[in-house]
Amino acid sequence: MRCLFKIILLLLVSNVLSAQNGLVKTIKGKVISEAVDLDEIYVINLKSEATTSSEKGGYFTIAAAVGDTLMFSAIQIKGRKIAITDKDFDKELLMVKLEPMINRLDEVIIKQYKNINAVSLGIIPADTKHYTPAERKLMAASGTDLKGNTDGSMGGSASLDPLFNWMSGRTAMLEKELEVEKKETLLQKIENQFGIDYFIEKLKIPKEYVRGFWYYVVDESRFVSALNAKNKTMTTFVLAELSTKYLEIQKLEKK
Image (cartoon, rainbow, N blue to C red; front, side, top):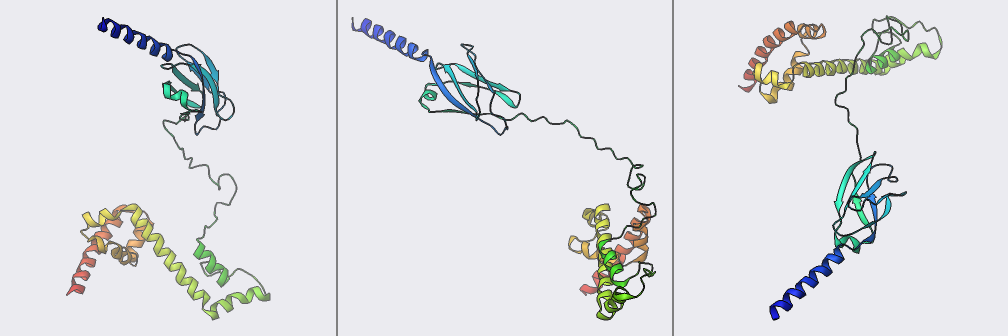
């Protein structure tokens, strides 16, 4: 008799729980996303087929029961499904985080048209000389171009500026600045064309001496000429020759 009572009680409890789980209630929620537009996101109860859409700010209201699945869908977000639990009804708002839909290009191709440039478009003359910042400073201070030609100014204080710059030592300082700029440009070319590993592995120069070797070779006219002429064969030949001399100098300095 007691066994039968327990079975009946268990069945009643199960029926009550099933009834509670199937109880339809209104659930309030809010979608959260990095997407700009959070309104008009569709919310669908896949079990009851009830639908709604989020309002401004991402707020929505929909009827659901424990165990139901809500699906969120829109053009600007990635679709997501969530299963409703009894704890979700205890919350003031069901917060649902959604990922924005990002359209990524599989490949970006950048085409360079050699025939289309400032010269071909008539923006600048074909024989225009391009000057570096240090070159422009020196030209302004000396009143000449880099070939030694005067700018043709006559009289007035403007014509006296080169003289004042020369007397004050400003012209000499700018000439040194130009030489430093030229060397820095050459050093950058060496690093871009060869890289540090080339000097360590091919020329057997210790890593701590590589940059010192670069400063050594930029003072060699044969190397500079080959580098500026973009003659890779001659450049590598001169580098091999100079590396031997440089390593010998390092050995003598250590003695």
